[in-house]
Length: 216
Ligand code: SF4
Ligand code: SF4
Image: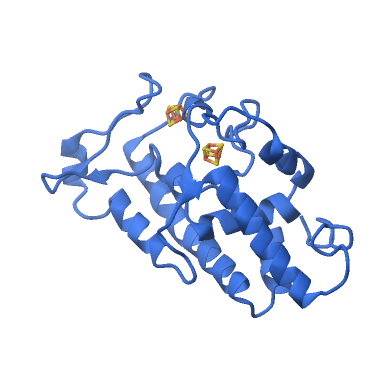
């Protein structure tokens, strides 16, 4: 994601920049695990489905919000994303849900951890064994049996491990907020840092820093 790299570079040595780098590297390092899980077990979602996002708004941490904020401020289709964030949508649908988008998500490459893990990762049960449940929103979705998971040994981490890693990322906190509120706060943090670095009227508002400048 070039706009993330450029945003990190523009934020220089600030804490916000380090935090953005940490979450970006984290996502890049763990996404192959989820891809491998779905490929190895043949887990798939019906192509037209996106029901999970139509009935869900994630609670996210500050770092997860930060990378989304970078996309909303400087990424491709930033105006549309900002409109969606401000739209008076019912508080049951994710503002970035788009039924006509390939992945049904307008921020797919920066999507939060829970969205990456949903239907792509098993969880650890109280019995100490890994379990994977069929998606509750779609009975046609794929499933994975406990036996298959047990046979996979410890090649796959449970969801809780990723959550713990996320919480301890540089600059992050376990305190979560609903995605729209969290992204608004993160946008303010980026804007504040940019205004300190470039104390010129209009930098944060995007008047002098365009998505083109950031390579979106
Ligand atoms: S099957 Fe479930 S996880 Fe997959 S897209 Fe549909 S609702 Fe989402
Ligand atoms: S961020 Fe994307 S994947 Fe996550 S709930 Fe919203 S639309 Fe769905």
